[in-house]
Each structure stands twice: as structure tokens, then as C-alpha cells.
Image 1 (cartoon, rainbow, N blue to C red):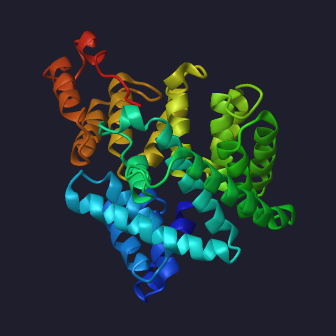
Image 2 (image 1 turned 180 degrees about the vertical axis):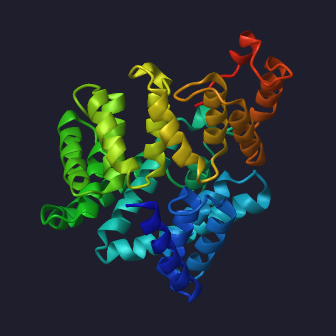
Image 3 (image 1 turned 135 degrees about the vertical axis):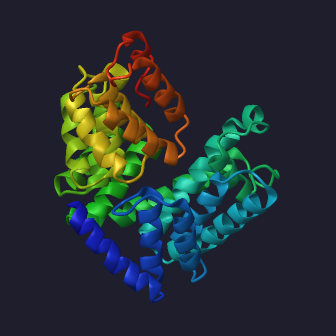
Length: 354
């Protein structure tokens, strides 16, 4: 999907959202949260999630709760996160009991999160990390002692079993979203090699139909060796590229990282890395803008251009990138009065960040 098509879709969704359509408000919130077809804006994401949530949209309520859980910790944010997650759970449960497979799947996922948190509660309960997981677990009553690990495990398994049965027929008939959901259940939540193989098969079916999220998952699997027989960087790049060409932001990010040499999965191809960093930077991503500055300063994938490097470092600073100020100072220290680099050692201190 081209950027033009995404922007056209954004305009249509925004019109419906502003007219009060809850699904469009939720979709718009997702677009703002993920930067799909529009610059990332968490504030606007919360705004549209809230409008949909107040109309009873369970997925909006859940995502709104998660967004509050990631905000700076204070009593109000924690209360809002817990309130919306609990409200979403009621909505998911009502839909799930009527046979909604997607709601059943969401319940399975949420209970699985609480189950996993219960296993490490003793070591993590006083730490500030894993705020999202802790908020969900708290909303479900884990820390109050109302429920235990076995209860969450049984509930998770029950809802996943129902979701699997609900998704199977539409998936077999070619519904790529149902195929994607089945792939996720088998690969992410059910243990055993046989389940993993089934999950990969369902992801493959959805990916071959063009579903960018499924293409991204296959890219991740092949790049890490997760759920597949072995790592295969060629397959990983193929699927990441298919997703990235549909403006899938995480896939573009992974391509940029791999081509820039992160994880040493393949020899660096800085020209390809720069190509994807430029696309990511269009969304206002400060890390990508900083990395573009580094690549211009060091001549990675392009002829050195210190004016362009400074421009991109300044853009990154405007996005709050903390590395850019020092990068500008290092660049200035390496240049002579004519604007040419005379201190290569200083330039070497400029490094890509991942």
C-alpha cells in the first residue's frame, strides 16, 4: 500500500471518526499510535481511543488502558489504566460468550499475560519495569490474591480453545485475518513444535495474501529462528521487505537495522539502510533522523555531506533525541573553517543507535 493510499484512507477514516463512528475512531487511534499513514502522535491516539471507548468499543478501551499504563507513573494514570482494562474485559467477555472469536482470543491473551506475571511476581513486584504487564495483572486481581496462576492458565486455555475453533472455518476459507489470529495463537501461546509448525503455516497463508502484519511476523521468525527450523536471513529480508513496502513501520525499522549491521545478521548495506531510515524519518522518528545524520557525516551509503548531517541532527533534536546535541558538537569539533573534516578520530565517535 502506497503512502498516498494510506493518506487517502486516513482522510476517509478521520471524516467518519469526526462524525462519531466508534470503529473509525478506534482505527484512527491505531494509526496515530503506530504512525501508519500519519505522523505518530500518542496524544491524538489517546484522544480518539477515548472517544471510541466512551461509546463502548472494547478494543479501544483495552488499548486506551495500555496507553495509560505506559504514561509516567502517578495515581491518575494508574487508575485510568486499570479502569479501562477492566471495562474492556467486561466488553470482551460479553462478546466472547456470544461466540466472537476475536474477543475470545483477546481474553486468552490477557489471561496468559497475567499467568506469566504470576510466575515472576516474587521477583518483579517491586520493580518499575513491565508496567503494561503489571497493570493488566493488577486489573485482573492478581496482586490482591483473588486469583492464582492455575486459574489464569485455565482461563487462558479455555478462551484460546474457543477462539481456535471459531477462527478455523473462516481461516480455511481464506480469511487472512483469521489465518493471522490462528498463527498467533499457535506460535505465541501454545507450546510444542507441532503447534509452532501450524502457526507458521497460518502466518504463511495470510502473508501470501498480502497481510503486512503476517509478513512482518514471518520476517521476525526467520531473523531470530523463532518457531522455524533455523534462522534464514534471506527469507527474513524477503518478508520484511514485503511488509515494509506496504508502509509497515516496524518492518521498515527492522530492515534499516539489519542493513545497518545491527545483530550482524548480514554484511552492512548502508545504501539500503539509508533508504529505509529516510522512510521512517518521514514519520518524525528521532532515532531514524539521528542515524541519517550519522550516515551523512561518515559517508555510509552516500557521499559525506556535513551540511545534511547537521540538518538531520537538528531534526532529531526537535524530536527529543538525546544523542543529537552531542553529535552536533562532535561534528563541529571535527570540521575546519572551510567546513571540511580534519579530525577523523572525532567523527569515529559518531555511531548508529538501534
